[in-house]
Length: 479
Ligand code: CS2
Image (cartoon, rainbow, N blue to C red; front, side, top):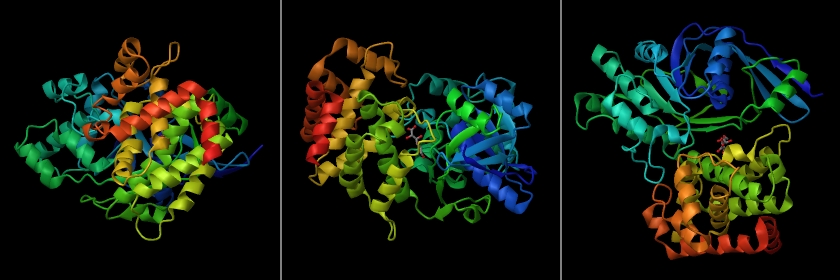
């Protein structure tokens, strides 16, 4: 049995100052923990949270309400040490997936002058942007809906815009919008999504342009989706909480310090407040998330199930070390004092945390939304510098294979119907070309480069001939 440390909460938040969109496991285990620590330190705080679930999981909202929005975060340092944190900073939980009364409650809450920050974790696809270009997808049915019915929005950008419209109309200062999703330039992308829904040059558009801050931030904590096994583990520690989440003990948050309406003194809780978050964000996206996606597609094809299994495969570990050292690190320009090699070593140690069941299938989800920022922007830079992209090319080949595997395997991705068409109509090299022509994923500039296409074709046929495990063995023997 592990040693369990319990961290009680000393108080409940006095008021709601933050509205969060996307009540998932990540939000509960990351942002809420920082806010709870802030609350514990101060004993009272106006920075309580109203958290809303936009799509799935009404049950979670109901469970949270039954327990006054109080829940447990279990931080597993390893199999030996666990910290159970009591979280009470959430004051309100809403389910707005059906567009009913609770949506209006949420909009009211967002329009309330006491709400000074709106945070989001709605995953990459929740912004309805073209992943390759960052432009709002105006053909997306949910966006078409929000353009036609702005007062009953379905999308996160639509909800933010409607709340801002109400504040503008009522003469209430704007809230700050803090995107906490793994996207490049996530503040600017969120601004683009919100502004894309409003008529250019309108009074509201100008007000948003001048008054609303969209600071960028980098978030980091490994939080696997809860499953039966995670709940059994918690029960063994005496924790019966149906709204609990498990995560690693590591946590990082780097935020651009631009909050015109004020903010909690997060820096006291270990948050890094910076002027420009982009170097940190790019480092995390390419080193951590880029490696995660490689482990997911390559690892699944090599027969692994979790991140821990995959990184425990010496050939795959070698491959990931090469990717980080040769294809991710050279594309980064970091502020003085950041040790990228040390960061890479720490990441491998975090991936090897055997107390978390982080399923590769969870990471493999929504690849079309993740690949541009995790691998492709870096690949472009590497090719510009005349460098090889063998690791990224193998990742893309594995992704194509993963997306076209026969049923009953289910690919969860907004483009899964497109993948099924490509799989049904094309084979071999033509199928690879069909994927590389997907403009939502591959920027035209990249997919037009012969060196890029050749590398992916080579990797794809190598895997066809030797199988993934055999190919990794060859790779490790030569690197
Ligand atoms: C993962 C991330 O599911 C995924 O795609 O790469 O959720 C990852 O665990 C977090 O970004 C870690 O901070």
